[in-house]
Amino acid sequence: MSERLHKAIAKSGITSRRKAEELIKAGKVLVNGKRITEMGFLVSPSDTITVNGKVAEKEQKVYYLLNKPKQVLSSVSDDRGRRVVTDLIPEKSRIYPVGRLDYDTTGLIILTNDGDFANKLIHPRHHLPKTYHVKVKGLLNEDSVKLIRSGLKTKDELYQPALVSDVKPDRAKFVTHFTLTIYEGKNRQIRLMMEYLGHEVLALSRLSLGPLKLDNLRSGEYRELKPHEVKLLLKASSSND
Image (tube, rainbow, N blue to C red; front, top):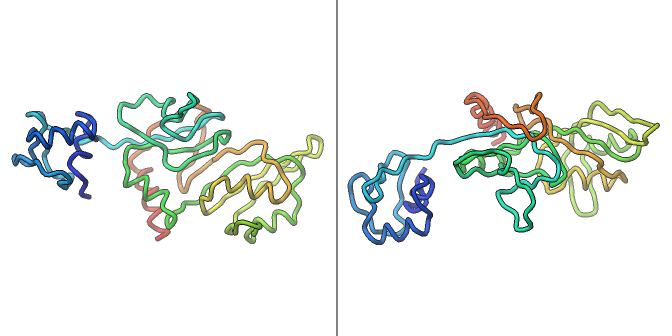
């Protein structure tokens, strides 16, 4: 996949995009031994880029699975100084979350520096099934379960049919625990669905994304994805084309 030369230089970690543009204009950049001064010049992964006599090493792709704690933003920065998911992973590469979980939602989220991989997973055409543990205030009745399973239509939104299982009402505490699998990624979807049905979401945690499961990873812990897991995610998203 081709990309602009200044972006490729910035990705290598040699310098920023703006500085890379200045170096290109100054004739300090070679591509496959040829001096390039053209802004917007496109390079491919097979090209060799040299900046001030130094070869720009291609950035190694990294993939992490994080169990996001509560009160952490699915972002790379926050102007209010709140914790963000990238604070939890000491990675030199500029990683970013694939999709998002709400501030108070916990569980599985992927972080990577691979833009093609991220775009594949979050593209509306490729939505992977996402499974959550949900705890709501009140007792979820069978009529509500049927509505969720058949596709919920609110005043403002139409939600695709979702899978509900392991419904466990706790009458003493007046709460219900259940497992919910959704097949789309609308903003605050589960909270808005439950609100429409008259239930406040007290806890929400993502357990799986497509074939990838959180398993025994504790809150705040992370691990690198194995190569076969990356391939499985790409294959699963491609099957939704």
